[in-house]
Picture 1: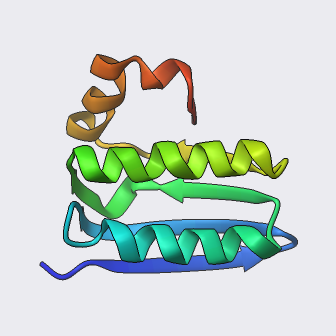
Picture 2: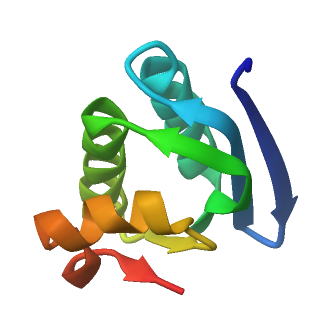
Picture 3: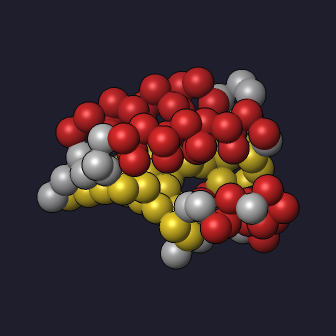
Length: 101
């Protein structure tokens, strides 16, 4: 399956829906796209509804984005994480760092 990024922008808020697998192959493009959107928007919601798989590289990208958001007074939220992906956050303790809706 190819990786895609759906995005919806409204009033300085962005909803990003990664589609497919967020892994070593796609992580760099995902990070660049989100950073670009972060420059002009205060709130970033990453909706995991269509995210099928995420490896440690994808998790590292989300940590990097979280740090960038925090340093630039932006907010980043995660929502609709599938059980296999939420498990990564639970095992690593990152479910206590990220705001997961």
